[in-house]
Image: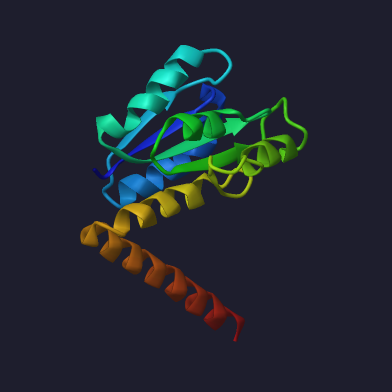
Length: 160
């Protein structure tokens, strides 16, 4: 069960959500991408949320802008961990509406929330969740983090 579902409210969210998709593929984690609108396709949302755990998913990453109900609604329906990506969209209030909508979940319905447009971190977090039970993925995360450290050391050399 190393598959991650990456869903978004509309195709306009794809440029941001692509960051999560790319990170996950870089860790050799299977990704299934779909558009699931909380407001325009509620039946699809309910079906996706209720069946995701039976379809081999380990984690769901849900990106949404504006009112950003998608991550919370999926979390209310699914027993899987959900990571919300607030997206600064054309109809948002500088992205704050999306951030607060995803952050302010009621007790019992958690959504791990990353920064505005932070899909890259959502992908890394999903991989880390999978890495708790998959040593191969964990080893790739360790190498990735070592690469980040090396980049900082290289950057510091340029200052001297």
